[in-house]
Each structure stands twice: as structure tokens, then as C-alpha cells.
Image (cartoon, rainbow, N blue to C red):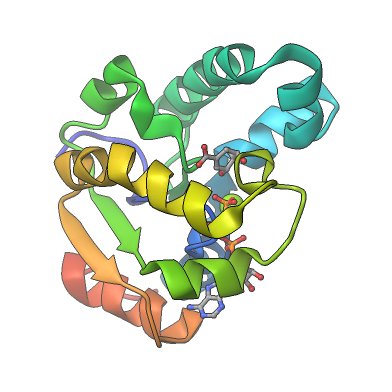
Length: 172
Ligand SMILES: Nc1ncnc2c1ncn2[C@@H]1O[C@H](COP(=O)(O)OP(=O)(O)OP(=O)(O)O)[C@@H](O)[C@H]1O
Ligand SMILES: O=C(O)C1=C[C@@H](O)[C@@H](O)[C@H](O)C1
Ligand SMILES: [Mg+2]
């Protein structure tokens, strides 16, 4: 296993990466970090603003370096932005890390993301856009993952427990 985060969470928008990362960190007695938060702090503006002002390719370039830095410099729980696995170099960097893919079905996705405009890729027709994103990405999440944890019908606490079980991680 490569040194670095104890566990890396990947998965689509709204699946609960940020929520579950915080719960896991509490239970493992370590810090958590979220590359979306790193980007907002570094850029001094929201993700939606970066998409609108500079476009998705600029956001993806910023995201790629944020993920590289977090993988190299964080030893707790790490949540990645939902689209970070689109980048081939990022996927290669994930090799050897404990990566958990949090998955969910479309009905649950629409409920969790709702009409929240903070997610620019779901702003117009959330259900169709989410389905299209998953068609393009499902195999990439699976490719980088050491374990898949379905989240439908589970509370965030139950998801956190399932991650600990899947990785056989001991609590602090
Ligand atoms: N297991 C769950 N059951 C029900 N609601 C959940 C669950 N996990 C998270 N949520 C809720 O779903 C919403 C999205 O969660 P969260 O922001 O953690 O997702 P995310 O994967 O980090 O999304 P993004 O990729 O956009 O950052 C929040 O309102 C959160 O409270
Ligand atoms: O799935 C995606 O492409 C995204 C997920 C979020 O975490 C943010 O990084 C942003 O909204 C884009
Ligand atoms: Mg998040």
C-alpha cells in the first residue's frame, strides 16, 4: 500500500463523500480533507464561479493539481471531487491507495442533490445529467476502487461503518 491517506473516497456528486469523510475521520481519530474545499480555499471563489468564469477545462486542471497535492500531503481521510477520476494521470496516481467508490442509484442522487445550484453540472436537468455523467464515469470509479460501498437506503453512519468493514480499518 502506498503511503498517503488512510482512505480515499470517490463517487458521483451528492453520494456523500464529504459527509462520510467527516464521520470516518471522527471514528478513525484523524483529520479529513476534501479537494473541493482545497480548491475553493486556493482560488478564493466557489466551484460554481470557477465553472462559470473560466469553464470546466480550467477547473479540471486546478483539480488535478489539488488532488496530486492532497494524495502526497495528507495521511487522514480524503474525499475527492466527483469528476477527478476523469483525468488519466489522476487515476494512475490512485494506484496503490485504499480507494472506496461510494455508489448510488439515480433516484437517490436526485433526492440528495435536489436543485442545489452549487453543482453546476446538474443545474439544468439533474436526473438526465446525472444519468449521462454516470454512463461516462461508472467504469472509471470502478477502475480506481479497491472497494465499492452502495449508499442507497443507508444513513451516513451506516455508510461509514460499511467503509470501515470493507477496508478492515480499526477505529481509534
Ligand atoms: N447516506 C446518506 N443518506 C441520505 N443523505 C445523505 C447521505 N449522505 C449524504 N447525504 C446528504 O446528501 C447531500 C450530499 O452529500 P455530500 O455533500 O456529502 O456529497 P458529496 O459526494 O461530497 O457531493 P459533491 O461531489 O458534490 O461534493 C447532503 O445534503 C448530505 O447531507
Ligand atoms: O462530479 C463532478 O464533476 C463534480 C463534483 C463536485 O465534487 C465538484 O468537484 C464539481 O461540482 C464537479
Ligand atoms: Mg463533497
